[in-house]
Image (tube, rainbow, N blue to C red; front, side):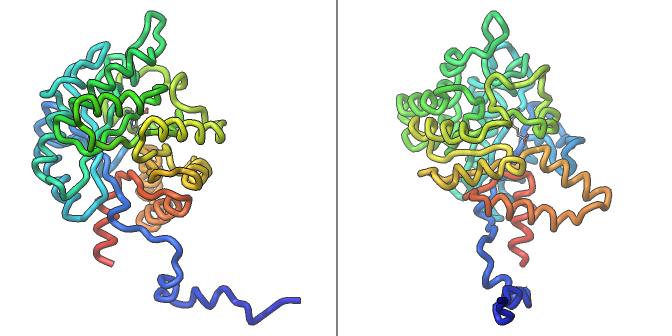
Length: 326
Ligand code: PBG
Protein backbone atom coordinates (compact mmCIF):
# COMPACT_ATOMS: atom_id res chain seq x y z
CA UNK A 1 0.00 0.00 0.00
CA UNK A 2 1.37 3.40 -0.90
CA UNK A 3 0.54 6.76 0.56
CA UNK A 4 0.21 9.26 -2.24
CA UNK A 5 -0.37 11.98 0.34
CA UNK A 6 3.18 11.41 1.61
CA UNK A 7 5.14 13.52 -0.82
CA UNK A 8 8.70 14.54 0.08
CA UNK A 9 8.67 16.69 -3.02
CA UNK A 10 6.38 19.23 -1.26
CA UNK A 11 9.41 20.53 0.54
CA UNK A 12 11.31 21.04 -2.70
CA UNK A 13 8.83 23.20 -4.60
CA UNK A 14 10.60 26.55 -4.23
CA UNK A 15 14.02 27.88 -3.36
CA UNK A 16 12.52 29.44 -0.23
CA UNK A 17 11.10 26.19 1.09
CA UNK A 18 14.30 24.32 0.24
CA UNK A 19 16.20 26.92 2.23
CA UNK A 20 13.76 26.49 5.13
CA UNK A 21 14.38 22.77 5.41
CA UNK A 22 18.10 22.74 4.60
CA UNK A 23 19.82 20.55 7.19
CA UNK A 24 23.28 21.94 6.51
CA UNK A 25 24.52 25.36 5.52
CA UNK A 26 27.84 26.88 4.76
CA UNK A 27 28.85 30.06 6.45
CA UNK A 28 31.89 32.23 5.95
CA UNK A 29 33.21 31.36 9.41
CA UNK A 30 33.38 27.67 8.42
CA UNK A 31 36.05 28.45 5.87
CA UNK A 32 39.81 28.61 6.38
CA UNK A 33 42.02 29.94 3.60
CA UNK A 34 45.40 28.23 3.08
CA UNK A 35 47.99 30.63 1.61
CA UNK A 36 51.55 30.32 0.37
CA UNK A 37 54.22 32.93 0.94
CA UNK A 38 57.55 32.71 -0.84
CA UNK A 39 60.66 34.45 0.33
CA UNK A 40 62.21 37.06 -1.96
CA UNK A 41 59.41 37.22 -4.45
CA UNK A 42 58.77 40.56 -6.11
CA UNK A 43 55.50 39.66 -7.85
CA UNK A 44 52.89 37.08 -6.83
CA UNK A 45 53.71 33.88 -8.76
CA UNK A 46 50.86 31.85 -10.23
CA UNK A 47 50.81 28.11 -9.48
CA UNK A 48 50.18 26.34 -12.78
CA UNK A 49 48.37 23.33 -11.38
CA UNK A 50 46.20 25.49 -9.10
CA UNK A 51 44.71 28.14 -11.38
CA UNK A 52 43.73 31.18 -9.33
CA UNK A 53 46.14 30.40 -6.47
CA UNK A 54 49.48 32.18 -6.16
CA UNK A 55 52.65 32.15 -4.14
CA UNK A 56 52.35 35.45 -2.33
CA UNK A 57 54.76 38.28 -1.78
CA UNK A 58 54.69 39.92 1.65
CA UNK A 59 52.45 42.62 0.21
CA UNK A 60 49.98 40.44 -1.63
CA UNK A 61 49.73 38.23 1.46
CA UNK A 62 48.81 41.24 3.57
CA UNK A 63 46.04 42.13 1.14
CA UNK A 64 44.73 38.56 1.07
CA UNK A 65 44.66 38.51 4.88
CA UNK A 66 42.81 41.81 5.13
CA UNK A 67 40.29 40.59 2.59
CA UNK A 68 39.86 37.33 4.51
CA UNK A 69 39.17 39.30 7.68
CA UNK A 70 36.66 41.53 5.90
CA UNK A 71 34.90 38.46 4.55
CA UNK A 72 34.78 37.09 8.12
CA UNK A 73 36.48 33.83 7.24
CA UNK A 74 37.14 31.36 10.01
CA UNK A 75 40.88 31.67 9.58
CA UNK A 76 43.94 31.85 7.40
CA UNK A 77 46.56 29.09 7.30
CA UNK A 78 50.09 30.13 6.35
CA UNK A 79 52.62 28.02 4.46
CA UNK A 80 56.14 29.40 3.95
CA UNK A 81 58.54 28.71 1.10
CA UNK A 82 62.09 29.61 2.15
CA UNK A 83 64.90 30.73 -0.06
CA UNK A 84 67.39 28.31 1.50
CA UNK A 85 66.80 24.74 2.62
CA UNK A 86 68.98 22.32 4.53
CA UNK A 87 68.86 18.80 5.97
CA UNK A 88 67.26 19.87 9.25
CA UNK A 89 65.03 22.72 8.08
CA UNK A 90 66.82 25.47 10.05
CA UNK A 91 64.85 28.27 8.40
CA UNK A 92 61.75 27.02 10.21
CA UNK A 93 63.22 28.03 13.56
CA UNK A 94 64.69 31.35 12.50
CA UNK A 95 62.55 34.24 13.80
CA UNK A 96 63.48 36.01 10.56
CA UNK A 97 62.52 32.97 8.46
CA UNK A 98 59.84 33.45 5.83
CA UNK A 99 57.01 31.79 7.73
CA UNK A 100 57.69 33.44 11.07
CA UNK A 101 57.96 36.86 9.45
CA UNK A 102 54.72 36.23 7.57
CA UNK A 103 52.95 35.29 10.80
CA UNK A 104 54.13 38.54 12.41
CA UNK A 105 53.05 40.63 9.43
CA UNK A 106 49.65 39.03 9.06
CA UNK A 107 48.93 39.20 12.78
CA UNK A 108 49.87 42.86 12.94
CA UNK A 109 47.55 43.47 9.99
CA UNK A 110 44.47 41.59 11.21
CA UNK A 111 44.96 41.53 14.99
CA UNK A 112 42.16 39.52 16.54
CA UNK A 113 39.78 39.94 13.60
CA UNK A 114 40.88 36.73 11.91
CA UNK A 115 42.33 33.55 13.38
CA UNK A 116 45.92 33.25 12.18
CA UNK A 117 47.15 29.68 11.79
CA UNK A 118 50.42 28.20 10.59
CA UNK A 119 51.53 24.92 9.12
CA UNK A 120 53.99 23.31 11.50
CA UNK A 121 56.04 20.94 9.40
CA UNK A 122 59.53 20.65 8.02
CA UNK A 123 58.79 19.59 4.45
CA UNK A 124 58.96 23.11 3.05
CA UNK A 125 62.23 23.74 4.88
CA UNK A 126 64.28 20.60 4.28
CA UNK A 127 66.41 20.05 1.18
CA UNK A 128 65.11 16.47 0.91
CA UNK A 129 61.47 17.56 1.25
CA UNK A 130 60.48 15.20 4.06
CA UNK A 131 58.36 16.30 7.00
CA UNK A 132 61.12 15.47 9.48
CA UNK A 133 64.84 14.84 9.75
CA UNK A 134 66.35 11.66 8.33
CA UNK A 135 68.40 9.00 10.05
CA UNK A 136 71.43 7.30 8.49
CA UNK A 137 69.15 5.03 6.46
CA UNK A 138 67.03 7.84 5.07
CA UNK A 139 64.12 6.98 7.36
CA UNK A 140 62.29 9.89 8.95
CA UNK A 141 63.48 9.95 12.56
CA UNK A 142 60.36 10.43 14.66
CA UNK A 143 61.80 11.55 17.98
CA UNK A 144 64.54 13.77 16.60
CA UNK A 145 61.84 15.48 14.56
CA UNK A 146 59.65 16.04 17.61
CA UNK A 147 62.34 18.09 19.22
CA UNK A 148 62.50 20.41 16.21
CA UNK A 149 58.69 20.65 16.08
CA UNK A 150 58.74 21.88 19.66
CA UNK A 151 61.16 24.69 18.81
CA UNK A 152 59.19 25.50 15.68
CA UNK A 153 55.99 25.78 17.70
CA UNK A 154 57.61 28.25 20.06
CA UNK A 155 59.02 30.31 17.18
CA UNK A 156 55.57 30.50 15.57
CA UNK A 157 53.84 31.35 18.83
CA UNK A 158 56.39 34.07 19.47
CA UNK A 159 55.66 35.45 16.02
CA UNK A 160 52.03 35.78 17.11
CA UNK A 161 50.21 32.82 15.63
CA UNK A 162 47.01 31.78 17.41
CA UNK A 163 46.80 28.22 16.12
CA UNK A 164 49.64 25.91 15.10
CA UNK A 165 48.92 22.94 12.86
CA UNK A 166 51.43 20.09 13.11
CA UNK A 167 51.02 18.26 9.80
CA UNK A 168 53.93 15.84 9.80
CA UNK A 169 52.14 12.75 11.19
CA UNK A 170 54.92 12.02 13.67
CA UNK A 171 53.91 9.87 16.62
CA UNK A 172 53.60 12.09 19.66
CA UNK A 173 53.76 15.25 17.51
CA UNK A 174 50.78 16.94 19.12
CA UNK A 175 52.04 16.20 22.63
CA UNK A 176 55.52 17.48 21.85
CA UNK A 177 54.12 20.70 20.44
CA UNK A 178 51.70 21.18 23.36
CA UNK A 179 54.45 20.58 25.88
CA UNK A 180 56.83 22.99 24.18
CA UNK A 181 54.18 25.70 24.05
CA UNK A 182 53.37 25.23 27.74
CA UNK A 183 57.02 25.30 28.74
CA UNK A 184 57.46 28.63 26.96
CA UNK A 185 54.34 30.13 28.50
CA UNK A 186 52.22 30.04 25.33
CA UNK A 187 49.31 28.43 27.10
CA UNK A 188 46.70 30.06 24.84
CA UNK A 189 48.23 28.99 21.54
CA UNK A 190 45.92 26.30 20.22
CA UNK A 191 46.95 23.11 18.43
CA UNK A 192 45.03 22.05 15.37
CA UNK A 193 46.40 18.59 14.75
CA UNK A 194 46.44 16.79 11.44
CA UNK A 195 45.16 13.69 13.18
CA UNK A 196 44.09 11.56 10.23
CA UNK A 197 46.25 12.52 7.31
CA UNK A 198 46.52 10.03 4.49
CA UNK A 199 49.32 9.56 1.98
CA UNK A 200 47.52 10.84 -1.09
CA UNK A 201 48.08 11.28 -4.79
CA UNK A 202 45.83 14.33 -4.53
CA UNK A 203 48.63 16.36 -2.89
CA UNK A 204 50.27 16.64 -6.33
CA UNK A 205 49.64 20.33 -7.02
CA UNK A 206 50.77 21.28 -3.49
CA UNK A 207 54.22 20.00 -4.38
CA UNK A 208 54.35 22.65 -7.07
CA UNK A 209 52.85 25.25 -4.74
CA UNK A 210 55.70 24.89 -2.23
CA UNK A 211 58.45 24.02 -4.76
CA UNK A 212 58.77 20.69 -2.97
CA UNK A 213 62.11 18.94 -3.09
CA UNK A 214 60.58 15.55 -2.32
CA UNK A 215 61.45 12.54 -4.39
CA UNK A 216 59.59 9.43 -3.34
CA UNK A 217 56.62 9.55 -0.99
CA UNK A 218 55.52 9.90 2.62
CA UNK A 219 54.09 6.43 3.09
CA UNK A 220 56.23 5.63 6.11
CA UNK A 221 54.52 8.34 8.15
CA UNK A 222 51.21 9.31 6.55
CA UNK A 223 48.25 6.92 6.75
CA UNK A 224 47.42 4.24 4.25
CA UNK A 225 44.26 4.75 2.20
CA UNK A 226 43.12 1.21 3.05
CA UNK A 227 42.57 2.02 6.69
CA UNK A 228 39.46 3.36 8.36
CA UNK A 229 39.56 2.18 11.98
CA UNK A 230 43.08 3.49 12.37
CA UNK A 231 41.84 7.05 11.92
CA UNK A 232 39.95 6.82 15.19
CA UNK A 233 43.07 5.61 16.98
CA UNK A 234 45.03 8.55 15.55
CA UNK A 235 42.33 10.99 16.65
CA UNK A 236 42.20 9.51 20.14
CA UNK A 237 45.97 9.89 20.52
CA UNK A 238 45.93 13.48 19.33
CA UNK A 239 43.10 14.40 21.68
CA UNK A 240 44.91 12.75 24.59
CA UNK A 241 48.04 14.69 23.67
CA UNK A 242 46.15 17.97 23.79
CA UNK A 243 44.76 18.67 20.31
CA UNK A 244 42.21 21.49 20.44
CA UNK A 245 40.96 20.76 16.92
CA UNK A 246 41.57 17.69 14.74
CA UNK A 247 41.91 17.59 10.96
CA UNK A 248 40.95 14.90 8.48
CA UNK A 249 42.80 15.17 5.19
CA UNK A 250 42.18 14.88 2.26
CA UNK A 251 38.45 15.53 2.33
CA UNK A 252 36.53 14.24 -0.66
CA UNK A 253 38.00 10.74 -0.91
CA UNK A 254 37.81 10.39 2.88
CA UNK A 255 34.26 11.43 3.76
CA UNK A 256 33.68 8.13 5.58
CA UNK A 257 36.66 8.91 7.80
CA UNK A 258 35.34 12.40 8.38
CA UNK A 259 31.93 11.05 9.40
CA UNK A 260 33.51 8.50 11.76
CA UNK A 261 35.70 11.13 13.39
CA UNK A 262 32.89 13.69 13.66
CA UNK A 263 30.71 11.10 15.40
CA UNK A 264 33.13 10.60 18.27
CA UNK A 265 35.50 13.55 18.46
CA UNK A 266 35.19 15.57 21.66
CA UNK A 267 36.88 18.51 19.91
CA UNK A 268 35.96 20.39 16.71
CA UNK A 269 36.73 18.63 13.44
CA UNK A 270 38.23 20.29 10.38
CA UNK A 271 38.51 18.82 6.89
CA UNK A 272 41.16 19.87 4.39
CA UNK A 273 39.97 20.07 0.81
CA UNK A 274 43.39 19.74 -0.72
CA UNK A 275 45.21 20.97 -3.78
CA UNK A 276 44.31 18.02 -6.02
CA UNK A 277 40.64 18.36 -5.16
CA UNK A 278 40.86 22.03 -6.08
CA UNK A 279 42.74 21.28 -9.31
CA UNK A 280 40.26 18.64 -10.48
CA UNK A 281 37.26 20.91 -10.21
CA UNK A 282 39.12 23.86 -11.74
CA UNK A 283 40.34 21.75 -14.66
CA UNK A 284 36.93 20.25 -15.39
CA UNK A 285 35.29 23.66 -15.13
CA UNK A 286 37.89 25.24 -17.41
CA UNK A 287 37.00 22.64 -20.01
CA UNK A 288 33.32 23.46 -19.68
CA UNK A 289 32.64 19.97 -18.36
CA UNK A 290 31.06 20.99 -15.07
CA UNK A 291 29.49 24.10 -13.60
CA UNK A 292 32.29 25.60 -11.54
CA UNK A 293 30.34 27.40 -8.84
CA UNK A 294 27.83 24.58 -8.48
CA UNK A 295 30.56 21.98 -8.13
CA UNK A 296 32.51 24.03 -5.60
CA UNK A 297 29.45 24.64 -3.42
CA UNK A 298 28.32 21.03 -3.64
CA UNK A 299 31.79 19.74 -2.71
CA UNK A 300 31.91 21.99 0.36
CA UNK A 301 28.39 21.15 1.43
CA UNK A 302 29.21 17.45 1.11
CA UNK A 303 32.20 17.93 3.40
CA UNK A 304 30.06 19.76 5.96
CA UNK A 305 27.29 17.19 5.70
CA UNK A 306 29.81 14.43 6.42
CA UNK A 307 30.55 16.17 9.70
CA UNK A 308 33.17 18.86 9.29
CA UNK A 309 32.81 21.84 11.60
CA UNK A 310 35.20 23.80 9.40
CA UNK A 311 36.88 23.36 6.02
CA UNK A 312 40.28 24.40 4.76
CA UNK A 313 39.76 25.30 1.12
CA UNK A 314 41.61 27.35 -1.49
CA UNK A 315 38.21 28.75 -2.50
CA UNK A 316 37.52 30.17 0.97
CA UNK A 317 37.53 33.86 0.02
CA UNK A 318 35.64 33.41 -3.22
CA UNK A 319 32.99 31.24 -1.60
CA UNK A 320 32.67 33.71 1.28
CA UNK A 321 32.04 36.50 -1.20
CA UNK A 322 29.30 34.39 -2.82
CA UNK A 323 27.75 33.71 0.60
CA UNK A 324 27.81 37.43 1.41
CA UNK A 325 26.12 38.43 -1.83
CA UNK A 326 23.29 35.92 -1.52
C1 PBG B 1 52.78 19.02 4.70
C2 PBG B 1 51.53 19.38 4.01
C3 PBG B 1 51.09 18.92 2.77
C4 PBG B 1 49.86 19.54 2.53
C5 PBG B 1 49.60 20.37 3.61
N1 PBG B 1 50.64 20.23 4.53
C6 PBG B 1 51.75 18.05 1.78
C7 PBG B 1 51.97 16.63 2.07
O1 PBG B 1 51.69 16.13 3.16
O2 PBG B 1 52.50 15.95 1.17
C8 PBG B 1 49.02 19.34 1.32
C9 PBG B 1 47.96 20.35 1.10
C10 PBG B 1 47.34 20.26 -0.23
O3 PBG B 1 47.61 19.35 -1.04
O4 PBG B 1 46.54 21.15 -0.53
N2 PBG B 1 53.37 20.17 5.28
